[in-house]
Image (cartoon, rainbow, N blue to C red; front, side, top):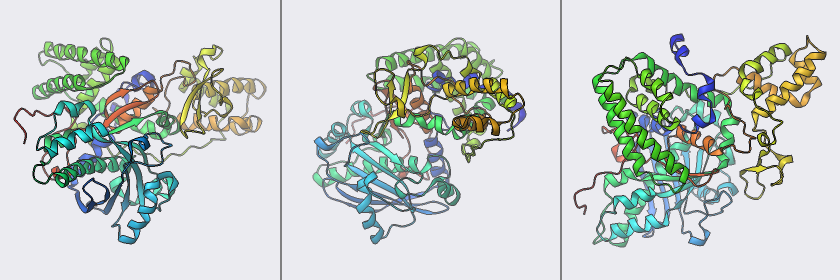
Length: 566
């Protein structure tokens, strides 16, 4: 990274504020976008090798993937699932679809082994030739409607598609060594196509979307061979894959601070280059206006029943109109995009500020997209035993000043705790005095742990002024993990989320929204403070589009379907 760009990057105090992180939007550097860009650029060949489905769509499918480097197989099992057994929770034991992404070609013997285990998910076991496992349930209402329309020789109504946005929704996606799968070190070092974080998981969802479209066409043709029509490609591209994300995702950003810092630094490096290195030309400014108008339509089409998100979308749409007007008032005299960014900071909401940044990055791919391989880091959490305790104190005061400013004597700042439910096998948020389990709480409130460490460090320094970390930890062995974290994360600019996760009013939704934005999802529909529905790959190209020129699918819109579709 050039020093001049590093100096222009936003400070940690601004970037790592939890409310700002919870206002991020997907961008050209989001993982789904970078994966699809690679697929299109390298012209991966994705073909149905096996499509053994009956007239109801039940059976087995294998998609074979040929990249410039390797061969992979996507294996999917479709089974009948009654409505009473359809459960999206992690504790479910059966699903409409189960699937695996595997290395190489799957022969008949291996296929039978997968058939015995993949449909069991957590109850089964696979070997290290498998990268990722997933399962999905059908959106019964929309799937049945689309199928009925196709059987009748009609295309489904785009507005009804927009109300849901997908034919299937994932209920979990697993990788990185779980259930016997290949661990991340193997995937990262041996298979360059999937060496970016979550690439196998993102790809399995992309192929799930493709299968959902292939399956509904297959069922319609099987049931009504004389009248059925295939789903129009414009509608196919508008379908995504649904996802419901709860608290299970929230701890990840805290537990993987080094990796999270790398993600944020990648984005902030790109943003700094866009904001400060170029003077907006006339055609880029016009593209900016086009994308602002696209965003207004996109968020106007977004469906949610959450009152807070409805209001946030309303404010965003109103402010985008103001952004459009303000840029036009500059009459092409913007010296850099940073002028707009600085104006936005004092004028508009966090949502609008971060969407402006996403749009600016979108119109400067030459400054941004080359950074997409810089999102990976090999974690190396270590204790530096030779560091003096005086130096450790200085590190805490410099990098964790935000934690020291919190008054933990106030009960409202420390009565929330995170634990893992034994019954549901999912992280939960409890409250002191209202929920059991505080004795099994997860160590997520970093700010409180840093404060406790600091207070004990000050006491220790009063007695051992010339001590070092190794002797301090011999006297206070329970502090080893937090000292290791402080020393490790202080080497990374954006490793710590500056929020008190033990506060009574903590918003887990901001953690979920942040991670999902890096994944590349859209159309957030919070169902509470604790879980959110969203859509993946809406607007993305189909496998039939590979090898063809394809426009950006940033901020997907309902396709124009003015003519009668038959």
